[in-house]
Image (cartoon, rainbow, N blue to C red; front, top):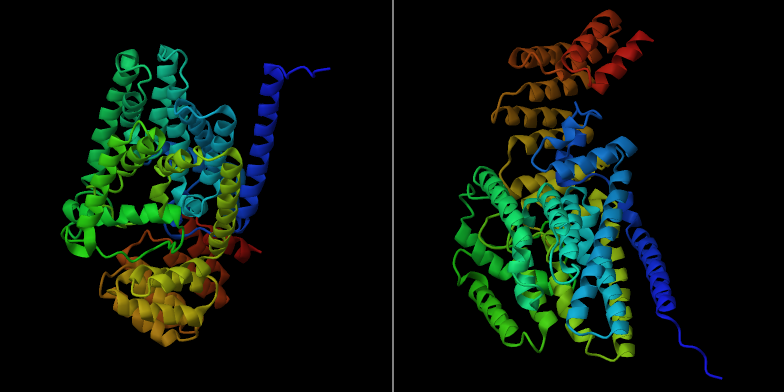
Length: 557
């Protein structure tokens, strides 16, 4: 007796069951792999987040009034739930990354369908696309580096808008669906500016796959054109005034940056297929002309790739589209607009899906068993490499030591290593790292002050005071005088310390730490009344000064 064929509903239920199990397994796996980073500290630009503002509170206005309000809003939510503990911020990054990976799988499934891939292969490869996005070692900087949440969160909105667009019913965009894409696009722009490319990606998709045409989507394109124009005007205002990204960087003109990116983008592609040599702060020489460091070969290579993508668009539609998608999505950070750091791994997060499409093109042509074996092998290697890379993010010292080993002649990794060593109490090592940093780059005021604190921590307090006096030659600030006073007071030089604090008060009477340090001297001397007065003065200037509040409570007891 023949067994009845499974119904369509039963097959659908099994698909959803396996999808749910796969998602649960992926979520568990990504948390296991990123476990070391969850214990990691705030690093580098993390310290410019609102959480490090000494006057920050739970008031949302202190978090969303800067250039990226949606990003600030996400940090505010974490702050309300977890406070200043970086663990909660890291957990949110991993969860957001998992959500983006799930949407990437959904997007890949639709393009595999358009390319004519059989259903069984389509489901398997869509799952592989999401897993590769989730577990590839190149994603570690975007996920483990809290300041790079702008990449993850912006792509959550960006890919969601793209998914809404490609999953339209009947080939036409309804008004409601158009508004949803428009809202998601606005949220992406309010998270990071490079998402301005979304309208161009939708146009490319319409053109490449002939799915509805431009007339059918005139409402959507009109809305996106308005939002894009407003976003472009805002972005132009930002890049024309900032000194870390834009056209004010005299030492990195647009042409030089473009020539350099002709090489750098190929490095990104190599790191996608052969992920080795990752570095949080790589030392990349710039190309002043097209002939420097072989930049012209990189440019010719891209021209040839685009031509081949067009010629073979019918034979390899997914790979051809993926290549153009990659070049479009990486263009905001890797074309003519100069950015201080010419290479950063997190910039590959947005165009990453384009390279996945190239892989899917060739995997879908294998037999199912061959494709499954290849996918499992690739993901297994990614898991091992990603865990090894993530392990460095557990400690700032490990991360920056790795960068110093790979960029030994670059100033910033050495400076950051010294700062991390000082924070970990490795004062002797910090002094040596600061001395090397001074040789590699010009000694500015910040470097000299941090160097002095490390010297004092290592017991070389007289040398520390000498370095602080060197720092005063750059700018006579209240902060430096208070540091001199603090070191003198630690070694019983109270009259000299009070003199330095008096100079600090004269320079800036509203610098509250002057009164905290003076209160410490009076408290140590046994004069609690004068100490209490100084602490109260500091609190009057800044009610959020925790050091002054704790000291006043201590004196009161």
